[in-house]
Amino acid sequence: MQKIKIIEDDLSIASELKEMLENAGYIVGITEDFSNILDQLKKEKPNLILLDINLPKTNGEILLQQIRKEMNIPIIMVTSKNSEADEVLSMSYGADDYITKPYNPTILLLRIGAVLNRSNKTNEKKFYRDLEVIPQKGVLKKEQDEIILTKNEMIIFLYLLYNQHKIVTRDELMTDLWNNNEYINDNALTVNISRLRAKLKEIGYQDAIETRKGQGYILHE
Amino acid sequence: MNEKEYIKDKSWLLVIEIIIYIIILLILLAFKVNKEATIAISLVYMIGIIIELLIDYYIKKAFYNSFKEKLEKLDQKYLITELLDEPSFLEGKILTNSLYEIDKSMIERINKYKSRTQDFKEYVELWIHEVKLPVSSLILMLHNRNPEQNKKLLEQLTRLDNYLEQILYYVRSENAENDYLIKEVSLSKVISNVALKNKDLLLEKKIDLIVSDISVSVLTDSKWLEFMINQVIDNSIKYCKKQRPYIKIVSKEENDKISLIIYDNGLGISTSDLPRIFEKTFTGNNGRKSSIKSTGMGLYLCKKLCNKLGHKIQVISEEGKYTKVIITIYKNNFYKFDDKED
Image (tube, rainbow over all chains, first blue to last red; front, top):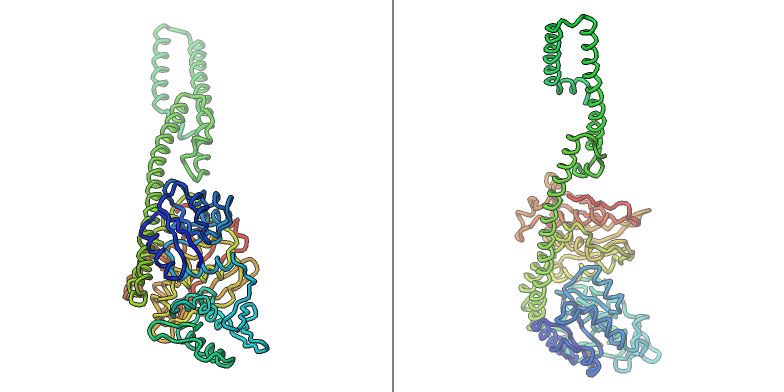
C-alpha cells in the first residue's frame, strides 16, 4: 500500500482529501504541526506528498526546495495559486506535478496514479492473471496468442486493472479517457467496453468485466 | 506668438509711452527748448522704446513658441516640465515653477489612487484564492458522498468557479504590470484541461467534442489561454442546439502564426449583435433568451487578454447555423504587444 502525506492547512479540505484517498486505497497522513515538517517526513517516509503553497509558518515553495535537497519523494503541488509564474517556479524547484484548486477529484486521483507509476519501476511487466499487458504496443499477450486493443480499449483495461479492488464508475473511465485526449461520448464508451469484453472472451476470459448495475464495472481477479 | 499679438498685448504700455512723450514735448515747449534739441530728444526716446520692446519680444517669442511647439508634440502633456529650458525672465520662471508644483501635486494624487487600486486588486485576488478553498472543499465532499446524485450541486459549483475565474482574470487584465508569463505551451494540454473542466456538462447535454490537429506548441501563457478557451466553450455549451450538437476544435498553422478554431453548430449570433459581442457587459439576443443568464464579460475578457498577450480573436457566425471563434497566436509576437492602457 502506498503512503500519501497531505500538507494542507485547510482542515476541511485535508480531511475530505484524506477520506477520498483512503477510499481509493491509499494510506494517508495529514499534517497538524507545520513547524518541523521535514522531520515528520523523514520519520513517516511517504511515497508521495501533496503540498499546498499557502501554509502557516512556512511557504510551500520554500518547503519544496528543502524537501528536494534531502529526499527524493514525488511531490504534487496542490494550490489555489493558478498563475503560470507560480507553476513554472514550482516545477523548476522539482515538483512532479502542479494542480490548481478547485480540482476535479477524479483527475487528482489520476494524476497521483500517474506520478506514482512514474516513480515506481515503469519497465516492470504488468499482468492480468496469466495475460501480459503491453500498453506501449496496445497488446494483451498469452503465450503465443496476442490480441490487439485500440487506444481507448487499452485505457479502459488499464484503469480497470489498476483499480481491481473496487468498483470503477463510468465517470472515472470517462475522465481517464478524456484525460488522454480521447473525447468520446457515452455511447462510444458503452461500445468500447463491449468490444473489450468480446476481445477478452476471444482469448478465454469470459465475464472478466462484470457490470454492477447503477454503479459501474469491476475486473475480476 | 507673433508681432501683432505682442503689440496688442503691450498696447497699454504704448498708450502710457505716448502720454509721457506728449508731456515731455509740453515740458520742452514750456522751457522753450529749440527745435533741433527737441527732435534729438524725441528720437532717443523713441529708439529707446523700440529697442526695449524688440529685446523683450524676441526673448519671449523664443521661449513661448518653443513651449507651445513642445506641448503640441507631447502625447502626455504633463511631461512638458521635463523638456523646458530655464527661462531668463521673471514671468517665465514663475510659469515653469508653477508647472512643476502642479505636476508634482497631480502625480502625488495619482499615485495615491494607484496604490489604492493596487491594494484593492491585491485584496480581490487574495479573496478569490480564499473563496476557492471552500469551493474545493465542497467539491471533495460531493465526491465523497455519492457523486452520481450530486451532479446538480456540482454543476452549480462549477458555475461559481467560472464566475470566480472571470473576476480573477478581470483583475489581472486591469493590472498595469503584466501578470502573464509567455512560454512554449502544448496546445493539446490546454485543450485537454478545458475539455475535462466541461466534461460533465458536455456529456449531459450530449454535445460531441471533436478535436483534431492540435499537437502543436504555441507561445502564450497557458493559464490565460485556458481561461479564454474555457469562456468560448462555455458559450458554445450555453447556446447549443437541441439536435446533434457538436463542438469542433482544430488548429491551423500558417507561416508566422497558429490559428485555433473553435466551431460549434449552435444558435449562432445575429448580424446586429455580432459587432458588439466584445463590448463589456453586452448581452445579445441569445444572452437574454438563454435560461442561464449571460454576464457579457466572457468575450470582453477574451479580447482584452488577447490584446495583452499579442494574440488576435475573431468571431464569425451565422444565426441559427454556427459560431466560429478563431484565436490567432503569432509565432514571434514580441513586437506585437499592445501595452496601451485603456
